Image (cartoon, rainbow, N blue to C red):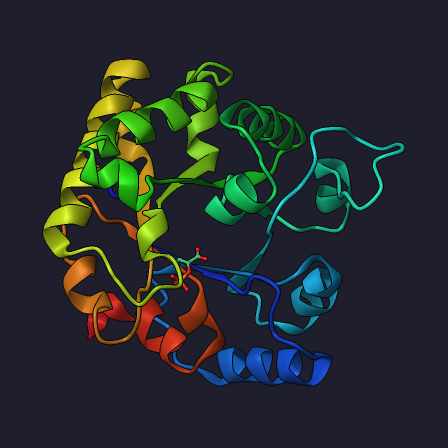
Length: 251
Ligand code: PEP
């Protein structure tokens, strides 16, 4: 089955003002985007609804996080049910900034993934190794451990709603992009793990996107790799070059 090219823009805790958010939406609304690419942008929670209401309909919106409970005394959290009620179709889970700064374990990420799926959300599931782990030759092992927690709580048909974002921590926000060889090798290993741990069909149909300092200059080559099905873009998603990244297959 052909895997549709996917480009996500993770705005993180940006832009700094509503005025800048409006300008970013305007830029995207006026851009010529490859209709063959699925495009999802992920603004901070405060901007989810205004962005959804003002952005063109062929761009979807993702939350950057959610909790696993439906409602209740969980100050500062947003539930999957609230995202669905607000017609937000995607959520990013397990981003390395959540794992490291906010101490989210793979088990918590898996619990959130299960809860989000149960409410009907699509998930951009982030995994990836630190520099120390890469230098110790542990990239595949770390990715498998992070994925295993999720594999353990999913059924085979849940995987159609998951996009895996392989994001080496050392490449996020550092300007140090993985080489095409490094990216292809990691993606191939992740796909082969899915084949063993879930099924050959899920391994073939699940999109595995790359994240980590993707920009207009490096996206084209990465987009041609057989196991790279798109990108999760941080810094460059706030700039006009995000349009070129969405269009990387056509550059
Ligand atoms: C990210 O935050 O998911 C990311 C990939 O960031 P950047 O593109 O800035 O490295």
